[in-house]
Image 1 (tube, rainbow over the protein chains, first blue to last red):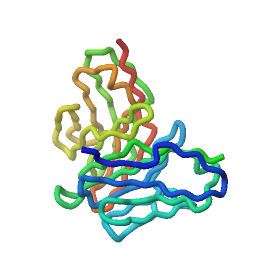
Image 2: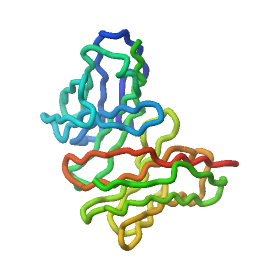
Image 3: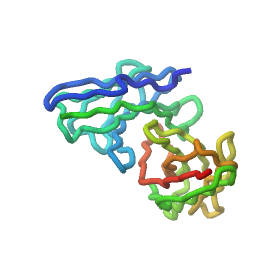
Image 4: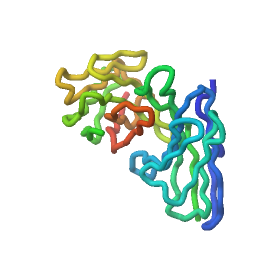
Length: 116
Length: 111
């Protein structure tokens, strides 16, 4: 029962490099989310996908792109990494369809990204 | 979404109940109260949520006041593994609802 799986768990990049963070869920959830968490702060929403085929910006989308590859997978891409993007990235999913729109989000264990 | 206010930190003795307060005085009728926690270096973990009735599950109980302006999360028998940051979040429900995490309450359970 994997839930939400994020890969990689750790990554170090140089400024200007590109990278894709992967997220997959096996709960048949329709909505998926990407957050970042900086030291001592709460989570901030980067992008979300309410359903397969749709994506929308969150609070802090600049410098990122996303792809909802299929119902299971939602990837986050950094095209040209900057030191300000050093953070812990969390992916989440939820089922807003079969059990109602108030269902909670379920999170992965994060990707710790350092950009030098 | 309504804003929430939580104490920045609190201590609790192992084996005792931990009562975590949250104020959400501007909550509106279609907004739920959600509680999550984040244990160090892990992803946030969903605990419980409710609209207006008290709720209980295997992890905790949620008590919402009648006017819905505040709530209390109760961990009935705190253990050292319950040491975490606890987030109270109020969010209206919709197909694309988003969670806004504040600073939360850092709960330290002491032996």
